[in-house]
Image (cartoon, rainbow, N blue to C red):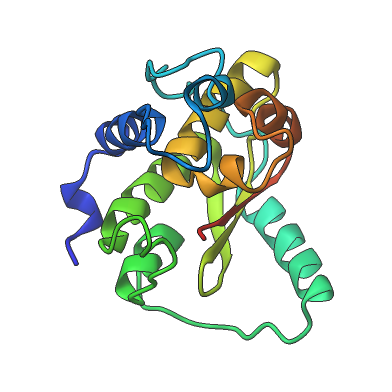
Length: 188
């Protein structure tokens, strides 16, 4: 595994976007029109990163609130401690392999999460075999910001859109994350 510091999050997201929006005539999951509708209004063009938002509250507050709610819903959850400077770096240090069906180098995903820590006050609250749960101090506040964040989420974890948010479009997903203080990811 590489180091999160050796990866550019913007470059990774742009590269993943190109990969996951490519039209594949042999795709048995989505035909060409449906595939392009999923990523509307951007289609195959990477829209770039969502702008950084000033954090109104300490990132620790929503992290604590989400952790308590998470534990209330899943009382069998266990605490794990990892010697790392941040939750993003803990993913790599712990050898987490959640997105292994997409890329075996967790440091790439850590680099993106580290960027979200800085831009949105995101904090790693929980990880599972193929899941990642983040609290967010400053979520997108309007439709435009939410669409850009949704594009980042699609590039980071396309299964959130392809398999998780009906009707499987960025717009529907963006609506779901507008103002939401936690982001959940699941890789199939």
